[in-house]
Length: 344
Ligand code: AMP
Ligand code: MG
Image 1 (cartoon, rainbow, N blue to C red):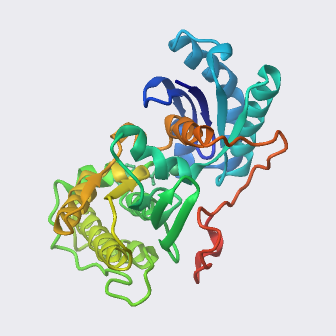
Image 2 (cartoon, protein in one colour):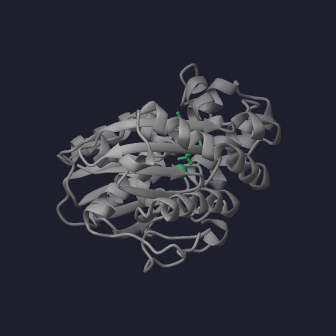
């Protein structure tokens, strides 16, 4: 059995975890920076990087202490090397390099998106490749065919906003504060999803991608009109988002061969209405539906450690001069889509 220390610092969570090859999370800690960014209504990269640099070393020490371990007990050190806010990524990656150098243990540079993509296998030992993954987070909205470690085919991505971003921006328009996704979901429970006519961008379209910018603008117009209750706007927004997700995922399912499961990951996968709709879609296609436990959906280091476990098992590790990457697509062959120039 192997134990991997995972480090995550690509956005606004500083996190460390110890995960074994038999899928046990021995310890994990997450220091959220929500308070620091709340006044700005979004993540401020410079503030994030500084906070990571202050917190990361004590956080790793505490995580080791929680598990009653020292670095001697660790077999490899995995850290997010991108994509993400580069200042934060550098803090985590350089910390991992220093630990690897001091201990002589192997370094594993993990793609944060691969962390999300493989995290369902940490929660569910029976999940085999290939599976269709819907990766929905604050920075990403992609449908990926996952064929193995490092083997991804991107079938769809967003041409503008990520879904979590649309949740956050719509929440801000409704004055719900930051982060907005969970607040939108709560408010939607009190509203009527049929009350506010909102668009379903790209639904039924020939191209496989997502678009959410128009939906967010429609939320703004609905709010400004003064005609609708906030709860009805939230419920209608969430339903429109679900309709788009289901339509695009159904299209992707029709375009691939046999699969073992439909899987959802990323922060937005915490949304119960979205999970429910995807579960129904999977049942319609006679597919298992797998979603990681809620705590593994949002950014965390257990998923980074687990991706490290999978890579380490394949004999992979990285040199100490491996680069931190602000952009790092899972599928390097995927075409850039129109409008996607601003996304990692
Ligand atoms: P991540 O980028 O993976 O850290 O996920 C964070 C994103 O997930 C943010 O945009 C959140 O607003 C979003 N999110 C978290 N929980 C929910 C939820 N229950 N419903 C919708 N979005 C959510
Ligand atoms: Mg993430």
